Image 1 (cartoon, rainbow, N blue to C red):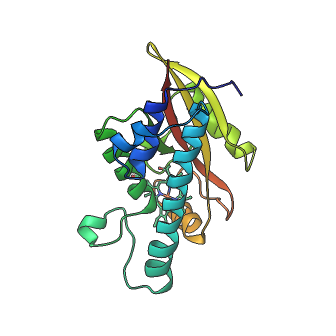
Image 2: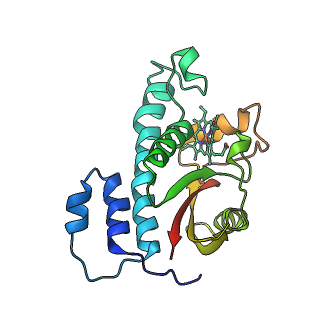
Length: 196
Ligand code: HEC
């Protein structure tokens, strides 16, 4: 793992606190002498993303679609008046965040994607996904150069936390893999922060 360069506090405060809904003025005024690193920033962002993703799957999808069976979850949610899938929820939020042009970007990828758009593209994404699948419980951190810009890139495992993850993916017509098991790494969240 390479050491991440420390980013300007204002940049970090804006990025992290924007997610928490705190105004930029408050964020910029915040004082710290810690010298926050890009890793601290991506770890914090990921903690929030992972919690939201888990709670949505557990309290909305598993409870209403699987247990109570009051509504279904479908990728064609609009036509079928169904719940948005967890991965779609994640992607729509990521696209919404991107519109605000923050300093960071994030996405959910997999070596075995149902949606081919979610396949890894850069060397860091490919290596990161392989690393987190082979080393359960560990995150992957690296630096990469894309165009003329240098980035800190972090990859966090996305695990089959519920039987719904496994059954839906294994049975999906577009899946390139149908032997996922509960607890296995199914993909990863890639978070990218520009470095100076
Ligand atoms: C009801 C079906 C369904 C359930 C439940 C489901 N997924 Fe997915 N998942 C999909 C579909 C469809 C996509 C593609 C969405 C898109 O980007 O358009 C997807 C996308 C993904 C991706 C991105 C790569 C890809 O396959 O395109 C990952 C990683 C992933 N899901 C993991 C999970 C995990 C982990 C869970 C449980 C917490 C889960 N999924 C629950 C259907 C499902």
